[in-house]
Amino acid sequence: MKKKATTKRHKQNKYFENDSDENFYYIAGYTDGGAPYGITREEIIAQELKFRGAVKKDARKAAELIHIAIADIAEKLTGQTKKENIRETMANFFREENNRLSYQNMIVADLLGEVVGIVIIYPGEVASRLDEPILKQLRKKRRNEVIFLDKEADEGDFYIDTVCVDDRFRGRGIGTMLLKEAEKAASQKGYSRLSLNVAQDNPIAKKLYESIGCKKDKVIKINEHPYDYMVKIL
Image 1 (tube, one colour):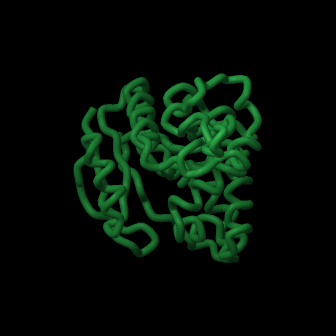
Image 2 (spheres, helix red, strand yellow):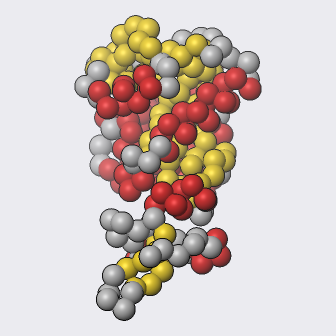
């Protein structure tokens, strides 16, 4: 037995944590026999998931998801090693403008006001410029003016820097939908090539990218690890 979703009753995020189990996103009540009933994740995603540009107040969750997605690259970008320091530094960059981690370059998957997924996108030809503020802070922290960041994107490509979905909502198509949003943005800006990098030891992610039409173009190194540079012709 399930109740029909009503938007008003789901507006407070406390329900997401306190009234959830593996079957229901929101437990509306219990039957006489003690069984829970409510709204499944699939139902609530179909009815309420929206995509929007990121805003500064998304910083904390955005930094968390970026860190999960890029792992050791986050250490390289921030010059930090502790999780809390890495995420704090990335959140600070997120709130600022004109850098690769800025809210300006992000689309979020929003479920009733909660960020459940993110994709960072920007033109390949501006990648070096977007790295300058990050490099400036990194060089100052390391006291090393010859630190450089690896080139990740080709000029002329619309580049997907990072995509990540909260682990509570994986396997429900949100990652694919975020990639489609990136593709839509690329087309709107007049780009004919969409590109991204995937670690060679991440076959699950590669399978996802192949499913939307991306094909391996070449191999590059990022932070001393091999990545397949994949391209989709739009």
